[in-house]
Image (cartoon, rainbow, N blue to C red; front, side):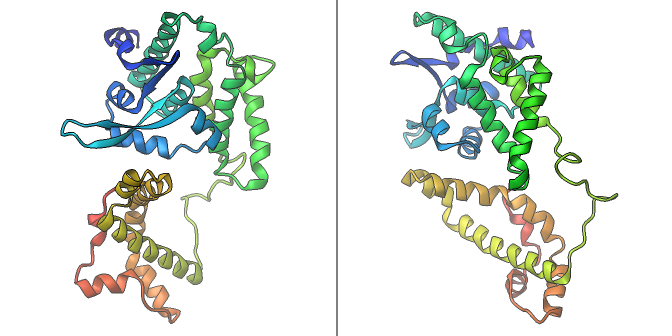
Length: 296
């Protein structure tokens, strides 16, 4: 890990403006070797409060090599930490460490003590980051279980890092604390495990409703493929449109898996006396394997 972090000059990946240290989505994509559009997708998909977004992310523009104006984000260290907590692997861990050191070094060069940017303990700012991670994880649970989960995971964090309060977790362990929450198993404790084989049974009515949802998604995906909703959202500066387009594209893989059961679901639907849906549309096109064309 140290070899990777020392081989890269991370000072090139942080900047300073108005006395504040920040990085950008472009620099993050370069450092982690990811496509910039994938980093943008990760940012707009972050499940955190609007307050956190406003404090830690700023939408800007940049010109690419052919002169087009494209979106990019500036982000604080807290924003960076929240964004990259899901980037895994030994190389990613080394890059995170190098990035954090670069933030600290830049802060010192600005004449600030490292204590201003990164305290010995995570403090209130760090707890806010953890609360957002906990909130994101808790969304998988029923509403009535989410508060209980938040209390439990904080108790687990205190035990894991041997502290009396969560805000006393060492600052250098913030990334590890985020990963601990993200990896916490909900199955068994908060979510019932599926029976052996992991199968579930749908009633004919439920299968018909599933087919109906798949048909609605099919039409949405066709609309997205024709008009590129995310691209329109970028041009208009509309975050809801941007998120909608990205989510439709990302859901293509799930649809592709369900589409393998299309004929089976359609037969159940027609058995109930209901016709229509995307299966009939595809048959009209004499093209019965549309799912292979989905961008996932």
